[in-house]
Image 1 (cartoon, helix red, strand yellow):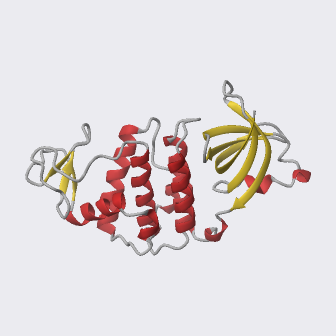
Image 2 (cartoon, helix red, strand yellow):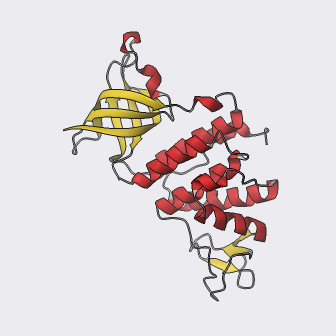
Image 3 (cartoon, one colour):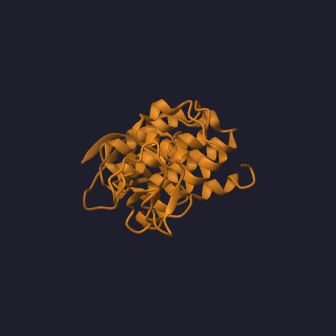
Length: 248
């Protein structure tokens, strides 16, 4: 069966001297692995389309019983080239690709994740604080895959947590107000709590002016990292963020 779809390039690796395997997240058919024959040859003219993060229109031969599909055509529609000289944004961009690749099961369809990536990539060159955009992306990705915990009310007494600090249990992932917290919980300050609630509920396009101070960034980053580590098999801190050690 021949299918056409929009897809973002998550990663590629060599298959032979002239061919590669590309991992795409498509809009309608989920994450797929595709064999792209002959694209490394100079005369193919499409090798640049396989840069990670490119959003392309692809045509491929699909076989439901096969893990590897066959690429027929590819046409790059947008590229993340605008931030190529900005180390921080480029590293965050690559980290988002790594997270999606680890979080999404192959051939599991969720158009919302594709739309989230598309919005995030368009927004990242424009935002004041790329970390705020990245953490908002992580929050919304966790919601889409069903792992973002409820942080609106205390699990024990029912108190609303808006405008309040809270603690969260790293095994049950239940939030508690400051009066109900117990030893060993991950603690989130009032400031970080308000930002997290905003990130969860505001549209992705509405965080262009959001900025985080160092304390809030560390709290929120640790909180999101622990959720991914607890729920996503094989998760580790995206390797691309290692490029930023010593920069921030």
